[in-house]
Image (cartoon, rainbow, N blue to C red; front, side, top):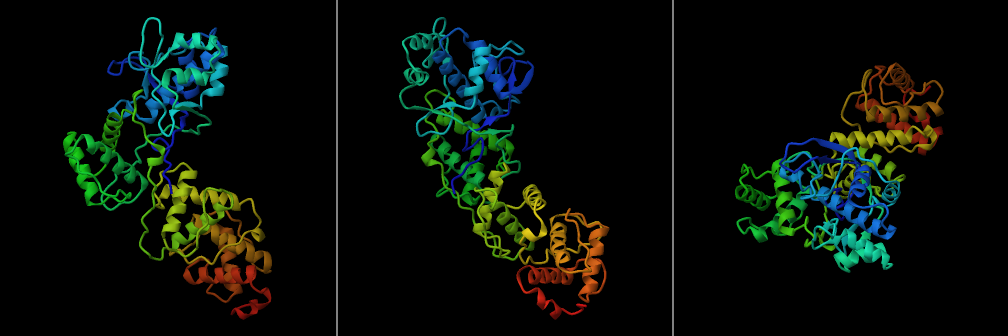
Length: 467
């Protein structure tokens, strides 16, 4: 499975960008504006609306690529700043807060803002250096020169090739994402396995070429082993960080900063991240143990697989195996969650809410529930959650077939209606009438449901207590 983590191995258009209205170390206001409005503002500040459209388009591509490079490399945030870019043209590009926007520029940016320049075969947006070409000159694009080329009937792509070389592409239809930081939110440490660790291993190995005191990590796999801890500790020592052997937020961004520097990712002469060299990631199988909640996760994944092409179906075996963990990671990627392959509370809640949202649109007769194991909890008045929702779904179908058992409206809340349905079910089948779903009642509910839903309803008299 190839790694696709927004901001790390996948370029995205951020919903917003934070601009520092001054030089990086100069006290100044930070303003957060939509990325679209930012590009319109810079384009209106940098170029003239009367220029030929081909020149305007070429410049907008360059402006967008430069901004995306700053965001993709986290150039400022990895250095401890709380903004993405400045408006100081000594460092970045012109941005005049609250200025007017030219109509012709606005129209073109609406069309082009999700496109950027990239070296062929590379991942990161090109740091498309540019200058005006009259007062100042640079190795990149000359803005007034684009006008001359456009008047010679160069296309926007040909103008960009003229300045940046023939080995460039225009990447279009870039996905949009909310503002985020690439740090996964929790420290990476010994014994863990996830794609964030694999990328850090790749980054550290690249850095070690320039800093031999940092040992290389043989055969990076995404597992935080002892050799990874040694490399992290050496990196922390070289760059004057607390030597913990754990990748916390400070170490994460220090690695990002040094990796960007040694590969020149934020330079026109960048070595680039080669797409073909982005590693494949195979999650390490977890312990082969029976986990009741994993069985529910596997069922949820199978429901979602019918609605999302990116999420594969899995075997419902209550084992957190490689197949299941890979499917969990595909779910996390599809729902823009941290890609860990673990069923944390955020993943569990997102998954169960998505499935419940789907099942609520279907009648009980259209739902096929598997024979799920008892999750290990006692369910009674006041209980809430996905397991309660499944109890209600089981009972709703049973009630649609058997007279005398009231339906339990599926809402995930164990209220009086659900308690009454459980009591009637227990009385109907000769179970102690408690209104509580313990292991025995859960197993009987599942058994009766499966017999009615997929077996022969005429055989229901075999169950004790049937009237």
